[in-house]
Amino acid sequence: MVSLPSAAVAVAQAGDLSHRYGRHDALIDVTFSLAPGVTGLVGVNGAGKSTLLRLLSTTLLPRSGSLTLFGSDPAHQLADVRRRIGYMPQSLDIPGGLGVRDFLAYMAWLRGYGRRQRPDLIDQALVATDLTGRGRSRVGSLSGGMLRRLLLAQAVLGEPELLVLDEPTAGLDPEQRVRVRELIGRTRPDCATVVSSHLIEDLVPVARRVLMLDGGQLVFDGSIDELGARGAGLVAAGSGLSAHEAAFLSLLSERVAT
Ligand SMILES: Nc1ncnc2c1ncn2[C@@H]1O[C@H](COP(=O)(O)OP(=O)(O)OP(=O)(O)O)[C@@H](O)[C@H]1O
View 1 (cartoon, protein in one colour):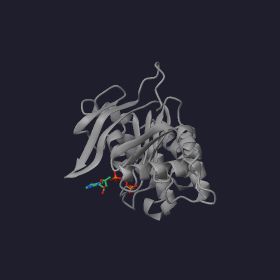
View 2 (cartoon, helix red, strand yellow; view 1 turned 180 degrees about the vertical axis):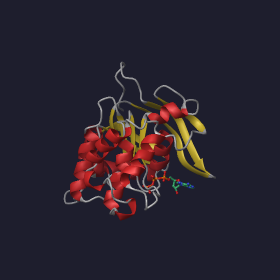
View 3 (cartoon, helix red, strand yellow; view 1 turned 90 degrees about the vertical axis):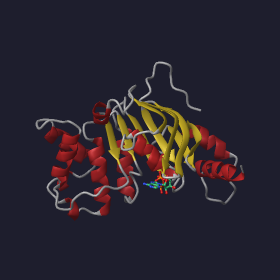
View 4 (cartoon, rainbow, N blue to C red; view 1 turned 135 degrees about the vertical axis):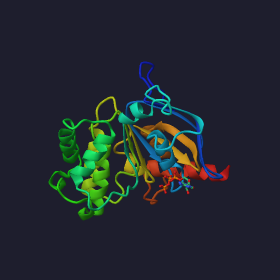
């Protein structure tokens, strides 16, 4: 388990956090803290990753268990807490006729940035996501990969203290995947970034720590090195699996066996 240095303030603290959609338990009694740095969130399809990220981004509010963000209960300080969070959802319906800069200006306005601050913040976000030449394009004219980067651009507007990224590299070409990883590594030093993927290998280059969900439960919380060490003795010759993948698969099979 990764423990927080005593002086570090947890950006997020979840205690027995659960979420149900109707009768379906999507997240069950999840407890963890997030400190500054990059945390990877891994799990198979349907494991509960997006649900946890929606809770961290305050898109969903907790109904069971506790969640503290920047030391506050988001339900009581929603506007203040939201201003400090950047959230990239898996998808977002943006009207195709909207200009790229206009969309980013709207998102910056929602985050409480004034008219004078917005142009510089938008320029920085466009540079960071390699979209500088596209500021005047209509959203509907962007390729799928560019749209993902636009979602990322709105998340990094104003350098948030908690950056919540739901599968940010899905659908990107190899060059852009590398650029997104570089961008994740360049966030402000006090930023806690959570990045989800269903592929552990996607997270190895960027994350210091890994949370793994399975069936809505937290089945691993530790450093990326601990996960690799756990899998090192499990890699069968010729399997082509990395140590991290072997550990991921063994955690899944342990759960099936119990
Ligand atoms: N709005 C919803 N209504 C009902 N069930 C939902 C809803 N959203 C998610 N679920 C269910 O909750 C569970 C967790 O879903 P979630 O999207 O959090 O998983 P995930 O790990 O992000 O999956 P993926 O990798 O496929 O995006 C799944 O069984 C899913 O079908």
